[in-house]
Structures are given as structure tokens and as C-alpha cells.
Image 1 (cartoon, chains in turn purple, orange):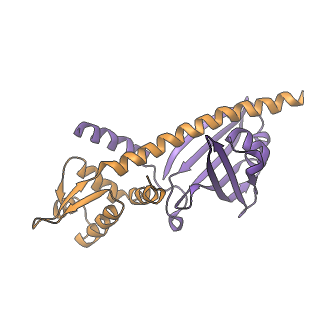
Image 2 (cartoon, rainbow over the protein chains, first blue to last red; image 1 turned 120 degrees about the vertical axis):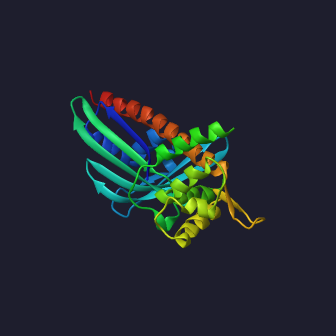
Image 3 (cartoon, each protein chain N blue to C red; image 1 turned 180 degrees about the vertical axis):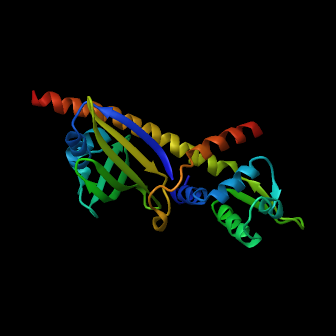
Length: 136
Length: 110
């Protein structure tokens, strides 16, 4: 269920983009978490955790790596709560002018149901939004 | 909204038959028989889908009449849409910062 699908091109090598995802200090720098409270073990089965602090509150993001292919692909579980986990898939391709990165985030599902995307249904939510708006 | 509600909503939405049922209910209430009509699968299978939708809070069923009437509850769907929007913005912001970070890395080398 690919929910969020974002593609960006960066003026950087695939190695640099890959490192930005897998090296804890660098990850914290753009993800926005506290560097001292960010850990990344970019190996298959390795865990990651990133804690954000703002306005006195704390938000913990965490997960586990399922696929790690330098410098072209990462698949990790992604969660901000114990109740639901989704998959994030990052693919990197070298292009003229840098690296094209595509990130797909699946919606959170109960633990036993997470898996690779089967069918896009974000269109469904959009369509429903329109239908329900008409009802009002 | 509780996170478990959210993941239950998405789990309910993961099935195309259930999505079709919700799309039909978005046009108005329907009985279980009316909902089952467009599908080749058994009434029993439809009832299982309806149970999943009901447990996820996406539909309610009235029990006052002989015919079970199903009603779409809009709130869980709205919450699911908001989740998508929130995370879309979250990542767009992150990637703006990632671009800046990568630029800094590059500059740091020269």
C-alpha cells in the first residue's frame, strides 16, 4: 500500500545520499532528531532510533532495516508508536547532475501485517475525501 | 487519534473489496444484502469484511430493524487522510533539509 511517494534529485553522489541515511550524526542533521539520541545500525536486522524534542515533548521514531544495498537501496520499518509500523523504501539512482532518490512510505499496519506495497490506494483516500465532502 | 485505531483503519483499507464497500456506503447507507450484490463472493465473506470494517470503526450497523443497515463513519477516513498529509509534509521538510545537508557536505570538501 504505497501511501507516500516522493522523488527528489540531489546534487550529490549516491554514496553521499546513502551515507546521509545510514550514518547517525548525518541522519540526525536532516531528520531533525537529537544527534545524541539517534542510533542507526544499517545492517539487515539492525535497528534504528531517532528521538525528536520540541516544546518540552518527545517523539521517538524507530524501526529495523530489512534491506541494505550500498549505495542504491534501503528498506526499513518505520514507526512512531508501538501500535503500528510501516515500511519505508529508499532507492537511489545516479543521474546527470547527481542522485535521484525515491522514498515510498507505506501506512502503519499492525505488526503482523506489514509487508511490501501491494496496491496503491492513496487515490482511494483522495476519492473518498471528495465523495464525503459532497455529502456535507 | 490512537495509533492502534490508525493502523486498524489502514489494515481495513488494505483490501480492495472493503474499499469498494466503503465507496458504496459513501453514497448512502445500505443493507448487508445490497452491499453484497456487486460481488461474486459469498454473503458470509462479505459479512467478514463488514466485521473488519466495524471493528476498525469505519462503519456502524444498526440493529433496530429487520434489515441490518450499514453506515459509513467518516472520521476514521478523515484521520487516515490527515496522517498521509502530515507525513507527506514531514518528509518534504526533511528532504529540504537533506538537500541543504548534502550541499554543506560538498562545500566542506572543497
